[in-house]
Image (cartoon, rainbow, N blue to C red; front, side, top):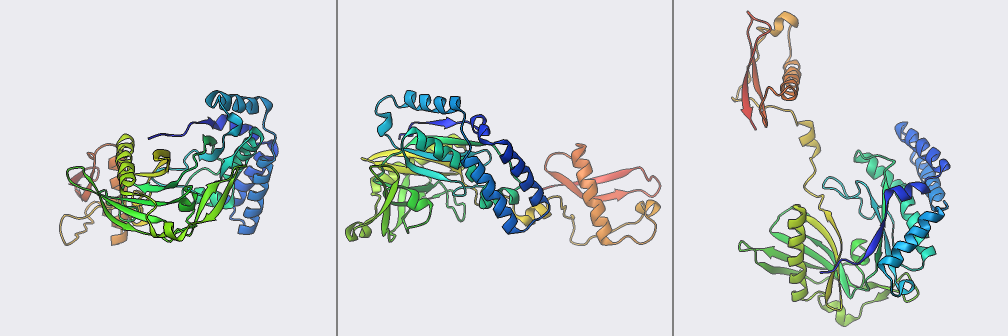
Length: 373
């Protein structure tokens, strides 16, 4: 397979787009988020930040460096090539969260001035209201660094997304391919119903096409000769066919298995075929099924009892906590001891306190029964 050539505009270079006014607005945004200002107020300041960064003047030496890097990477017909300008923010795609589609991507960009403008818009898009709220809800920094990828555009005949495990159940024996004619943007954005191909991984590592569902595929997105993209209708004959033949699907699946093995985690892969050649555009971790649920977080330090019935004793705690101690109070104490013993290393790995036995004669002595989990 082939990964299209390109360059990366680093986080350091893009920091120069943050003018003093932009920084002041970002500080104001953080204060408004802390004070829980209204949605309308937050949206308004997010738009002001985006406008400030989009209209910022990129330093001349950075612009010249970008142009020189493109010239070195594409020495022939540089001005005739079209590029995809994609966001690549720190923490954008991890096993815990994915900001796919929340920051801008520009397709079919040509010419250094258009490329620079697209880079600035990509950097600005990290302060869109949707992106800010998503980072806030997932514990990410509001002011995060942003890199931008400038990658050669491939005029794909067919493109889409592959999940190396079932995206809903996490089943590792089932791979899912979604595909449509033209560029993969129609699949990623969900604007069209794509073809869906399910591939089964058998015990002997053999890949077999298990099921194929033909989508409506009413329109496709293609590159325009003068830059940018355009939608066009798919013919009735093409609609009735699967846009990806069996050989192409199996080739894609085999390559995806190797990519998964390289990263050692399930992958969400954007791909495309052009003139029967496979291109891989992006690989990110699959987020579904890997994050901890709210229930798991709430009960992280819970410790079950060894027997069906719980027994509570006041023999020691009665000396420091006179009066009746409720089951809730003892439960809180047990969690406290769990944390303390684990932090101090007095419990081995993956072991929690099952019960706490104390002596009335020696208030400083405790004996623990340890229960693996």
